[in-house]
Image (cartoon, rainbow, N blue to C red):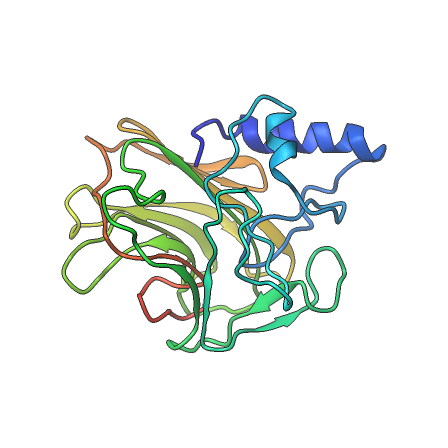
Length: 239
């Protein structure tokens, strides 16, 4: 939720490489919930402040023990809807990554908290998520702040049916604008998807490299829909 990416991604990777003493592999990434590094160490709020970045509003490590716990210090804990199960994540642990089964009854979500909701970010923001998929021919939602029922949609990041990364947003809650990358990401490998936005630029990054750019005419719509991981609907979607 800081508009400083790509500096966020590349500076953070560089800093972590220095801390651990060996290079991070930028194309080995994690599913569904931020954040792990490619060297297997879980990020903390201190990793951001150490290189001059703001602590994200929410920072989640999905584990079977505490899948909802926010690691940012802001206590923005998620709800596990639909008994999501866990598998091997980027850190190699047996239950460190959620596995979404394609059920509309599944999602990690944070219910909108009203006017002061921390995920109402119409003026500027950054959303970043690790994912892994081999599914082609079906739209797969990664992260979103949308409410289709009632036309109150702000933004969402997803994998298209063609296997390409995409980001969509609205300035009026109804009509969606979309930018998309050109590299197929349904290769059963870990990837990092990041979107940044303000009133004049929307940028989509894949593994730290900009894939697409758009130019909104004004700020994003202020949505009262829940913030969701692995979902685009209040009761989950199809990832």
